[in-house]
Length: 343
Image 1 (cartoon, helix red, strand yellow):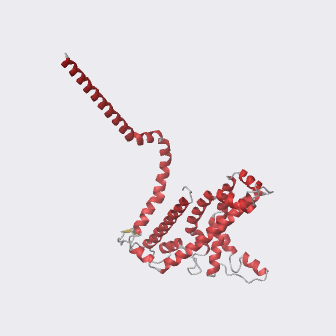
Image 2 (cartoon, helix red, strand yellow):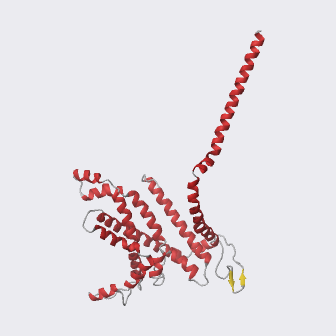
Image 3 (cartoon, one colour):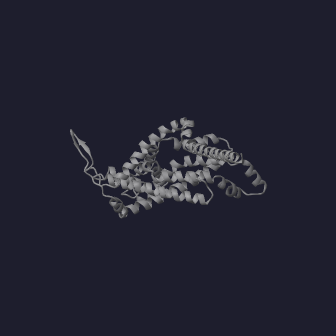
């Protein structure tokens, strides 16, 4: 009787352990099933979101991804107009260019022209962005106040942004004309000799910077004006009650309040200005000589103006431009993180 009872207890204990193990196994299988099915459930739950972004991803892949991969590949070859595939009449000539590795990068980086173009591009970018930001901040502060005719002033200041860029550049080209331009006519009326706006290297550089600033100020002004209007007015009232001067309110309230907006618009403006092809090409075509050539216009020259057209060289310039902008963006992002900004 005692032996039978002990055997029953052992059997029951074994069954309990087995059931516990089975339960634990089922629990583990259920947890792993949840983990494995998480992505699937997310896709099933938010299928409409994936469906909405799928066309955008596809278009970006076709418009940006494929040309980027193709350009990187061409930069590693010796492709030019003489050895690429082409069709002449009824005859189709296959491509004969070859893979050359990093030879194009060594050639471009070792050419003094690259350093000249890079220095002027950096000067051009820094000058345009800094002047544009300063003017945009001043105008935004002016338009953030209540005064008669504010809406009309806003419309007038945004007008350069509404006009197509090439139209604005051609209008400025007419203004800068040495013989018949309005600017020189006004100067001559005041007894000042005509200025060779687009014929002298120094004046040409000042001219392209002026036009680019004129085109960029509306965007900067609108962005900063939105940032100003997001700053609570109670902060200014409290500071004024505490006896803070206008400069102290600007320094300790306005500038910190605009930090996030300023960082974003400065980054965007830098990228746009660094690659601002239309202003340089349409206004001076890189001249006089090559004094106003920037990196992107040099890449265009290699592919469409030089003879023979050097597609591999142009692609190399393009990849280097992309690399420089990526380095700038990474350094800029790191500096923002050190300042406590999230980007």
